[in-house]
Length: 392
Image (cartoon, rainbow, N blue to C red):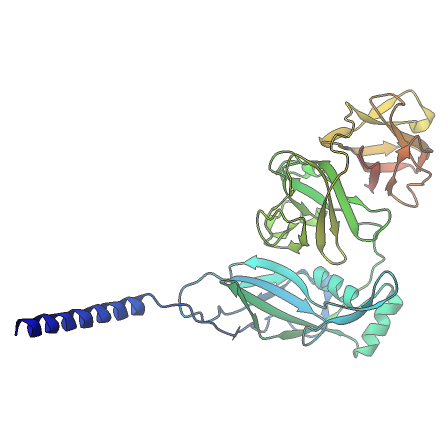
């Protein structure tokens, strides 16, 4: 009988324990794994949207049914393909290739709504259709009954699993403007300070003289080496800064996103690197410079302005090896060079007319540079010899 009582007691304890565990599971549900969620139709009219006159189109969606309280992150993606499939293209060597039709316009969101600019949709359309002239645009519109369809979806990522929403379509009328010779992108971060005042726009990424839509910044990456960058029209709006999707990412290469981006980091703070962005495919690359001890200078100046080869017009240092001068006015067409420390030991020039090409690469002891009259912001790098004139 004694053994029977002990056995009965053990059975009761096991039942109580099992019930308790069941209760714990009921109060601590695990997240479900939904396969989709709903992106709402925009309240904005979805037909014949004139992108040139559209400041923003708002979108909202429902949170996927994870079955418990979670905080997923969202992106908003757009494509010219209904199924978001790849599209044919041609590489720089003339080879036929397939490239992604998908552009992520907003990322890193924890809210269930956002808006996208007409300008950003327009850029995506021109890129996907290979539109390089007004004639190209008219052909594309004629082939699509007078409008270009655009498809939008949201994605939700939780616990390293990403799901897509339904796809919403809109009908757009894009526009074509002659592309500027370059787009201005300004670094903000450890090298230039995190100030968002308009006078702090001195960290210009230099446009490449060889590749379209490629820009770079070469310096000794001091401090923590963090950075983001802005287009001038978005300057000061942290929600519209370009950078990496993951805050603190120090990868040697990766993708760029706008809206909700995190600060990226030089792979080796304290070293001399070139940071390069390619705005055709929205990627970045860090390249460590061979010379980790480039010459340093006390001053960089313009010399030769108005035929005066005795007076130096000094630039200001913005970060190691990067210099600028704001609102500099040339009273008349003139020739000039860049030089260091008020002497000719280090000087840079190239046979180039700023009126034709507002950026280039100066060579040691190169020929004079020609500039028209006018007011400019001027940027120069004493490692690469790159310079850029921004017309005011």
